[in-house]
Amino acid sequence: MYQSALSVLGAGSYGTALAVAAASKGLKVKLWARNADKAAAMQTQRQNPFYLKDIRFPDSLEVTADLEAAVTAAPIVLIVVPSHCFAPLLADLKALLGTEQRVCWATKGLDLQSGRLLSDIAREVLGPAVKIAALSGPTFARELAAGLPTAIAVAGSDSDFCAEICSLMHTGTFRLYQTSDFTGLQLGGAVKNVIAIGAGMSDGLGYGANARTALISRGLVEMLRLGLALGATERCFMGLSGLGDLLLTCTDNQSRNRRFGLMIGQGVSADKALAEIGQVVEGLTMTKIVFGLSQRLNIEMPICAEIYQVLCAGKSARAAAADLLARSLTSE
Image (cartoon, rainbow, N blue to C red; front, top):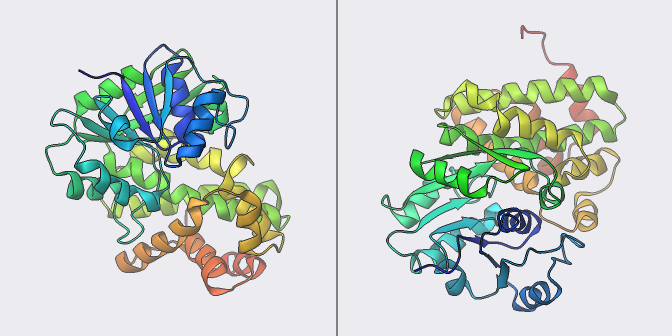
């Protein structure tokens, strides 16, 4: 019935990397790109020259700009688009899905309009009958696509579906772990981008390794506070989609969020930093959403609050750092 084992919607760096990883084991994979010219270029050149130049596509990977052809080609559809594109793509997807198809995503973030989990949006748009899941964890696209060892976590509405995803995408260098905490997995992938901007700011200010480590540790506490308030478990935040992704994003310059914060700390304007990076910086939008959630739920998240003040209220990074250090002493 189906031509492929998996359809990946979104041909950015991460979507391409996941498609390459799955196809590397011989699976037939469809990769959908919104732009027809870029899709044709990728199909002809057998690589993604826009985001992952020199990573050769496996023979079983096919690129298309036809959304209907991509969606109907496989029993499992994997969405990998920026968070602000997630809900609109789901709406387009709904009319194309068959009754037995399942949907998962590797999009990290919260809904731009409501601040809700992407799983809530998926249930609302697709209905309760469609099995859904999310993939999240410490992953740089180029390393995954190059076949370097990588591990992430999977959670969803159906345990058997999550197990199927783990088995389908597992390779000799790509390992997937199943977790039962759907909420925690999604929150970790959203909040870590905010903290990564802060870690970059700290390094941009020249504060050193001590400050960066303190910020990561206390940022994890803030992630945990928000997660517990929304029904997540503490254990999930100690795993790949929590601490693991946080460490990766805060400490390596492959992270767009960290690089963005680094430039802000060095006095570069947000517009100039975004232009230099040239790709979506999810943490910029997530800062506003996470700050709004913390205010609405009355959750103490001082690091996220100060990052919000810098990015959205004109406060200097140095003044934000000084105010964090001047807070009243408390216990850990």
